Picture 1: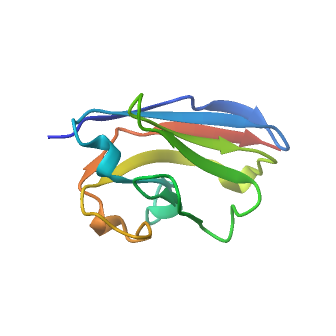
Picture 2: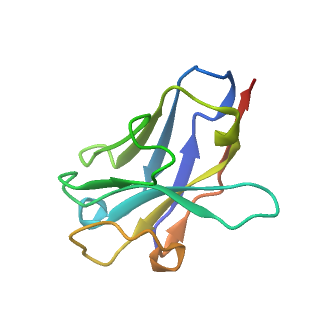
Amino acid sequence: QVHVVESGGGLVQAGGSLRLSCAASGRTFSSYTMAWFRQVSGKEREFVAGITWSGGTTNYADSVKGRFTISRDNAKNMVYLQMSSLKPEDTAVYYCAADTTPRWISSTGKHEYDYWGQGTQVTVSS
């Protein structure tokens, strides 16, 4: 069983920055592919960014490329999402997810992820 907890959400003005953190349990955390998704009420949960077990490969949704950076610290069982140049359309609940299947690149499909956090709200005001 893997427990995932997000933190760091809040209210920020457009153009500002915010860093989300994700703490995950599990003795084999360093083997998990990790990702961030987001969801707006009434819409599908969408992939934002993913990172492989070593941190060597990352991928991003086109809408956040160049603005968001995903990283991980396996020694601390932590994953981060640094968000910059935030836009009102980035407003959503952000979820951290763990995929326990070893992969060469993180999947963008939410059904591939085995464990999810409860989400953290990010609101970007215009």
